[in-house]
Length: 207
View 1 (spheres, rainbow, N blue to C red):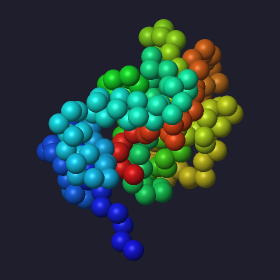
View 2 (view 1 turned 180 degrees about the vertical axis):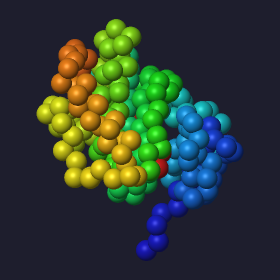
View 3 (view 1 turned 30 degrees about the vertical axis):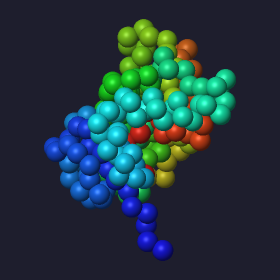
C-alpha cells in the first residue's frame, strides 16, 4: 500500500503556492528565514488554506477540535514552540510563535546535525529567556513530553555526541542548561493537546 498523497502549502518561501510532494516543498522552504508552510490531506483543504493564510488555518483547526469539549481549550495569550529535524540525527531548526496569531517570535537553525528532542528543549529555554528578557509572564506550549521532562531536570538527556558538525548546537545546549540553573521563571510551561486542538501553531508542517 503506497504512502497517502499529501499537499503542501507554502505561504512564505522562495516560491509560494501548493506543492504535491515534500521534496518540492522543501526546495522552497529549507534554509529560508521564517518560512511558513503546512501539509494537508486533500487538494481542496490546501487550496482553502493557501487562500486564507496560515493564521486562518491555526484558528480553524483549533476551533474544530475544541467543539467536542469547549471547556478544554488552549490559553491563546501564550507562545508556542516546536522543532523540526530531517533525519535522526539530521538538519534541525526550531521556532516560537504567538499562539493566537502564528506570528513568528524567534527562529534558530538550520543546524547540520541535531535531534528533534534537542530542538524542542532549546525552543522552550529560548522561549523562557525571550519572555524573561521582556518581563512578560505568558505560558509556553510545547507538544514534547521529552522536552518537558528535560526541563524539569534542567538537563538534556541526549545521547548525541559532540563532533565537528554539531559543535555549535551542543554549545548552545550547554548554555541552555546553564541558563536554567542560573535563572528563575514563573511562566507555566504546558503540554499542547494535539489530539484535542490540532497541530501546535509553531508546527513546521512536515508530518
